Length: 440
Picture (cartoon, rainbow, N blue to C red):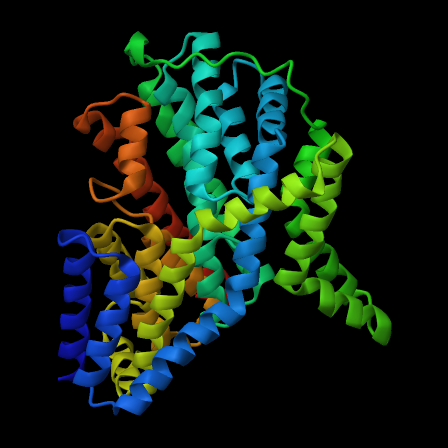
């Protein structure tokens, strides 16, 4: 009975968001309350669960996501992303231009959210395509593949970060495993798949020719790449420091302090504010105004993340948690594949990768603790499933179609196929990693 209630509530959630166009925050709030009442929770317990779900979720990731948005805005506004793109393009040359685009998306995709990276890099894609007289889909698909993979698989992006915190996964392991899985996914669904569109004829009227920004001052390539990778580098340094600090309390304390993602993000923002902002003549006021705008851009993402925490907490605090875990453990489908299927189904229904991943987390959370499978693999499985089958209910689908001036059929054959390839390759990678880590 309880499982029927949960499934019915999720179906209603999907209808509210996908069919009746409700705001996701309001939909999650209403469904969480409805689910709690139907499961027999008292009004007091229900409100307590909702408050705890929002509070625990925000308490663990709010600072990280806000600082990440500020850092991404700085990297975009300062010209660092453009510098990275132009440098990598020069290093790779025309022969390997699609690999250059993929590598650019990989590097820039670490600090930038997908939508921000898309808008920022599309002009570069069009100018490169025009310069080399190549199809803009052929040039753009590898870069956007990398952006999508980084957004779906890896912290500090919102869904991956929330999943890592909720599943109690190690962030360093999650990032390392994610990179291992991301590389083949990007290579196959990016430069290799893009060759199918090399000879495609663009509608010339749709090709945006971007004027050269050479006259605009940009940071150095070294500074740009260093700032983009700074949170990862700080956490990696802290992990190495922890390995060599045995017996040294001060070093261990420093390592533990720097390993915290919020601290790494804060230090990165401070350093980058100086190297990309103040040192180039920007005022403190302009930087602070830019950071305030970046938070406005992610306000709805934060609300959705918090509201998804409500549903997860209702599942945990009710008797439903053990029932779900028992059903999943007795299911003939392997746990990681089951988690991927649930997430992929929600992605097809809801459209948003972030919302699909967060909704799936509430359903599969009870399974994570009882299988013995490393929680990092569940984070990556859900991330992979959240990218599957992007279609007409996904804003990214329409952004790709309209910017690249494609028909619906062409968008399905390029964008939707690419996203599905990335998702399936990600699942295969996770299963392979599970066998390597757990010995089969």
